Length: 94
Picture: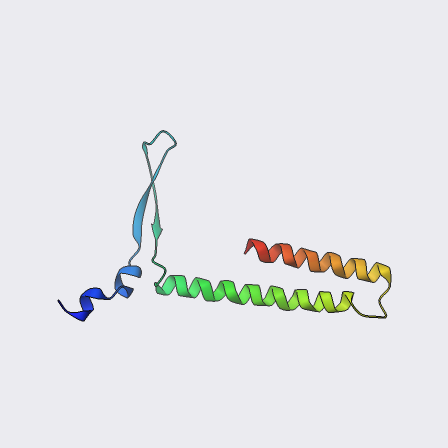
């Protein structure tokens, strides 16, 4: 055997077709393609996801800082907290 026989990257970059079955177990005729966790496609999607989360966290931090300003009125604090909560919910769904 050669070391190349154990390389996983080429296999992960080749999508595997998975058949989708109906609730009764019959073949639906539909399928999805799944890439491995070591694939280039997965790494690119993960990087994009992390960038989106970072942008949400930065925006949420700004809203949180505004809510905690000493000169803020109760109405301004409520508005900033509402905006902060909205961004926190978005971050959970990415």
